[in-house]
Image (cartoon, rainbow, N blue to C red; front, side):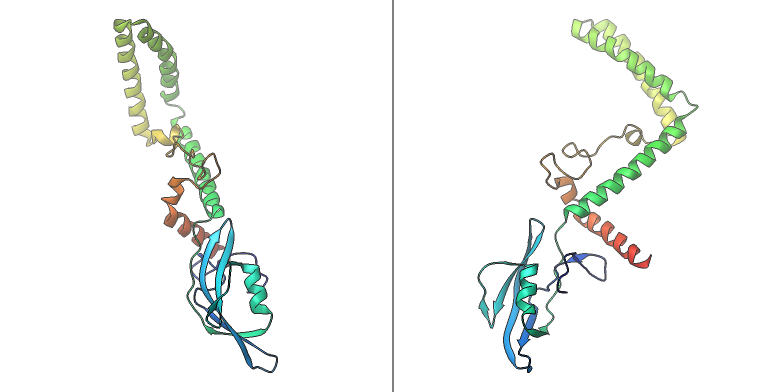
Length: 223
């Protein structure tokens, strides 16, 4: 355990605090006589660091300790674990969010390429060009208050859009995939806000993201 900087990977592939909550460690002299008993009384994850609160012989130790500090405290004397405690899973980590959304983006790019390939040889892109050419005149007609002209253009646009929809259905293409529509307006489906914080959409997918990363770790073990 000592000297490790990477997160502790459980048998299930998930990430946990290195030191179990309520674990107890009995320090001994070189002769094997008991000296101190330390207990992990709390653990938290702040700014990318594992922080622990400890007690020594039942008395709280002042201040939260980093993983490295706990290593030093327990490593100063030989010791035995007298109580295993329980593993506490780490919160959703930035690295997990980043990997999940990067892989999701790769899948979406692949799906987009497949969608475009399916539409080759159809009239879809020709219709798209016609729709784009009619959009400026429609905006102009509306701005001028020419309701008759605007209505005529809207009928044409709706007819073209209907033809597009038929083509998409016939080849089995999702319009959202084709247009690379994002599901989150805040982060643009990258998992992080412009300020660099984990986006609320990612927090809402915490279990899904954790499970995805755990499966990747388990797969790497088998490779």
